[in-house]
Amino acid sequence: MILFPAIDVLEGRAVRLYKGEREQMTDYGDPLAFAEKWVQAGAKWLHVVDLSGAFSGEGGIEPLIREIKKRFAVKVQSGGGLRKLSDIARRLEAGADRVIVGTMAVADPDSFALAAYEYKDKIVAGIDAKGGMLAVRGWTETTDVSAVAFGKQCKRMGISCALFTDISRDGAMRGVNVAETVRLQKETGLDVIASGGVASAADIKNLSESGVYGAILGKALYEGALTLQEAEDAARG
Image (cartoon, rainbow, N blue to C red; front, side, top):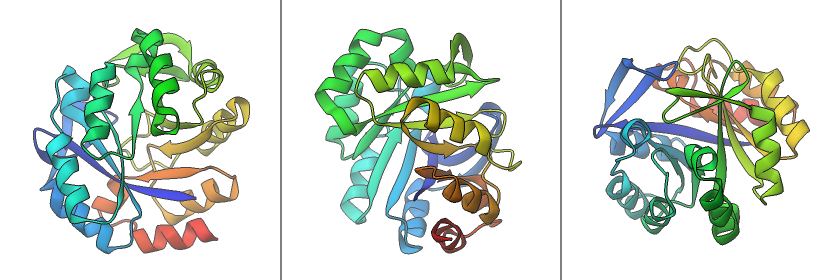
């Protein structure tokens, strides 16, 4: 099981949102400082999100990714604001090892299909759900497409991995939605990364024992409720 410490960046700051709401934000400081902290703690991957891009479609996180890749021996998975093929190309050229694409898949499925063909395993489908239904544009719009149906569509396009966020759990530290995460993985055949609500080592243990591919570590790490070492220990069982 792969663990991904998260660095969510809004206006150049490392932040955490509560249930994806910009008005309920905690500012933690310098994103590079947290990249260094998580790498020193043993992280093999970082999950770096451009929240400015997710909200407005106009981000600029590429310089941060270049600096992370320059300074640290770590892989970077990055999302937020990737709505055109040129956005994906720019993020990958900056050094991201793979990118998360959500809104484009719904708004421009032809471009999404082309991205899946061109970049293959560098594309991770972003499946963000409210009440089981797909949410897009920085979680500000809910569609009439179910998360599972969208996951199956991504699998048919050749996508192998998805990031699943239960928005109602994100930043709330209420525990991860293990049941829905496992259901999505089983019903779609995708390797699913769980995101939203991881609060303790028990959440990681439950996901790992259920065969889930990976998990995002966010607020629990930042608030000290869980260390990366504790999470790694739980993932190994």
